[in-house]
Length: 315
Image 1 (cartoon, rainbow, N blue to C red):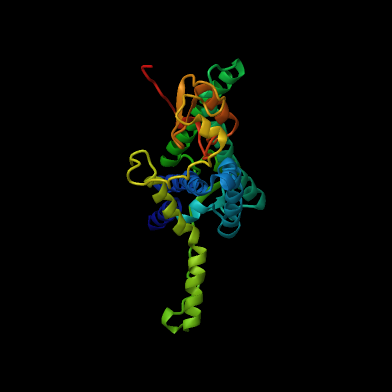
Image 2 (image 1 turned 90 degrees about the horizontal axis):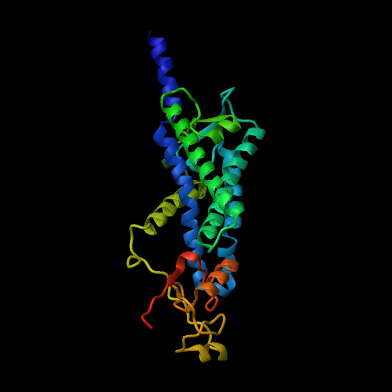
């Protein structure tokens, strides 16, 4: 009886709870929007020279994420967010360290799936603002909704099976790679008391600890930044730096205090303001410009369709 009880206790302890596996997934999904806010803030400092940071952010993040996850998988056997919660990956069949093929497959799934999903969401956002959609675009939007719903239902099914113990894996991506999550076996690296170390060795240990845990500490900053920029907080709590006015030239001096659009140089039709700069354009001119390049046509500040505001007047 005691042997069976000990066996069950070991199994329960080595299996992470559903709260831990969901928490590490939430941490992983928080890093992307938080880092995007940082890049956006940096771009506002100098939009002309740094516009490429905002334009190619997804590709930059893909590169950084790939390098980061590869190093963590090779050294700790788990991704950054998994290691943050002291979790590691083991092979489902042998319950041992995953093979290189499994790690590479897991790495590809971890970095490529979110990248493709973000790109798909951005494309969907652009399609939903267009005047008229072509048949293939409508089909793409419908298929995207169906795939997204099926994927969420599949993830929920895995969660339920993981909770009731009928599945060892909580994620379909881990299941595809043939791996499951378990706790890391943490062993003390040095049993020698800290007081017996010299000052030089103590400083060295502190520096090594700080470097090895810098990303973990930065994760807290990422989560705080994402909360700070959440929709529940108003802009009065935090404001981006006020951009410098555009350089004056004959073209815009002649348009000042007129009803002309800075793009087509004609009378504005369906006046629409761009919130990031305050300039007013024709709706069609501004829409077409943002579709081609995501920045203000005058100030070159980063902008999206969401920054357009239609202006109505009695005149």
